[in-house]
Length: 55
Image (spheres, rainbow, N blue to C red):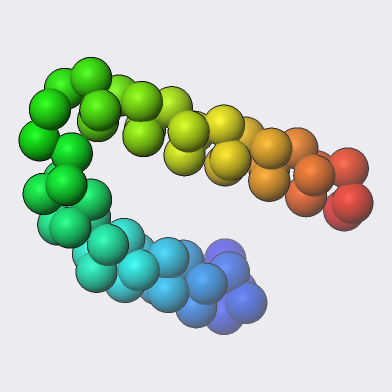
């Protein structure tokens, strides 16, 4: 694993650490949390498919 893979992984973990507490704080209710999680899952899935076809 080269440096070109490690740096983006560290950046993603740092963003997750910054965003996760507020995400959990605003999603106290289970139904709302699952809805937001599903939306983010769809966004990530679409991005992964697009990246797969581009590369």
